[in-house]
Image (cartoon, rainbow, N blue to C red; front, side):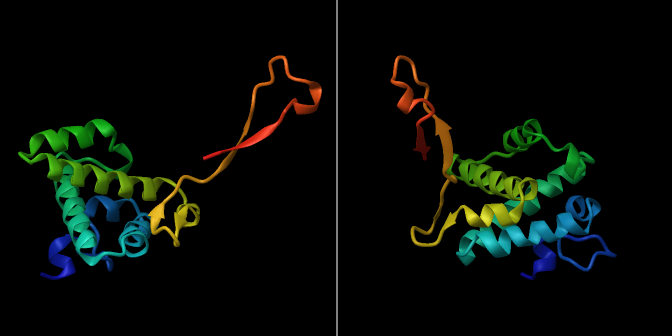
Length: 147
């Protein structure tokens, strides 16, 4: 099965992306392809997620949804419209969440959150100010890492 069969593209689009993505512009198409190439290393997982994306965007085309109009309610309606087992539902939700996170956040920022040593995604560390009720002034504004 070729990529063009898995992801139907617009006739004038040089990239094998769904029509919903292609209509959103070249940048959306590029980010869509980057998601599968840069974030998913296992070829079986990548193939499964490509299938999920193709099915979801085909469903979106049936209802004339544009990329900017897709909301969590649409994803829920898509999941409810398909008879699936619990593991399949979970796989669809994980794939779509990852794809939409990649399309929304800056891809360069997302890559910095990937731990190559652990081989898993980590939330970036942020600073948090600890409230100082009744503490001496020397500890006022003490900072602590929040993981």
